[in-house]
Length: 381
Image (cartoon, one colour):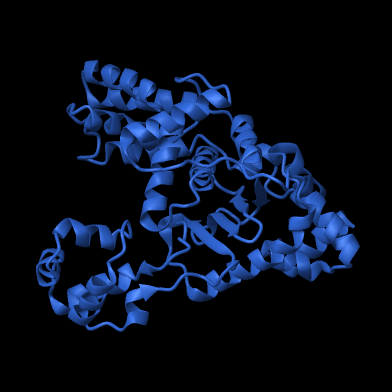
């Protein structure tokens, strides 16, 4: 999801070429006189080949440098990342549109109500190691006052966003397959983070994506697959920490059948307001780390069916906030400050008045239809 600010291998193009040439990672490793593990790390964008190996890789795959390597964005260009439902492919046009939104956001930076002389703390050497992730999650739970086995409430997550100087921008995208769950824009020049969160998704999914985005904010130096893997691991550990996973693993092992195991997981998920699949995954991460037998609820898709049924018990976040599927512009604008502690619309109001901006400015910065932008414009003016 996160796009790193240094060069990355074009993994999609490389895998495509491997298939065309009938090559494997092992055969490429042999041709380049490196280990298979090295090639595997290249294709996860965890490491980048040395210049001599990069040249040999290009020759072996018959790829030009521009096809082999994804160039970093220009200095101080917005760095954008998406999380889309179904992991839909991001087109170059969509990517550039998001960068345009970032350039517009940069005009609001002078209005930020944050300390300009310091930067929020970030993790020194973030990694996806299980023990490290658990240590980070435990420290963060402690810093915002959440006991190890309790639910992570939304107000505490919002507090964490504010401490990290990340600006939440709530959006109404519709509960549709092709819309974003989240859009993350980092502005290098001001070192500010802006996160568009779609209110039209289920409440437990929304909580997970908030935690996921916090992972990115807390470790901005990680990018590519490594950044994504870190944020996935961070979100799961923050929502279902090791102490709870350990307790529930013991519970599940004592239960006689799959039906009872599913019901136990759903009970925990309901208490934590997270997906049953997230609970199940964290329990098995605990088991794998401690070399214990896996709890297998996937052979007949039991956990996936249970998660699907569980989802039907929850409304969209927008319905909880507004008590309606069609909030007024006043309700929508007010929710940013009242629900998320976000200064976004207050800053937007000031900027529109000072710079005499029109509704088209709101249309561009929120990526919404002009009619919706006009209604918000009238509310802000």
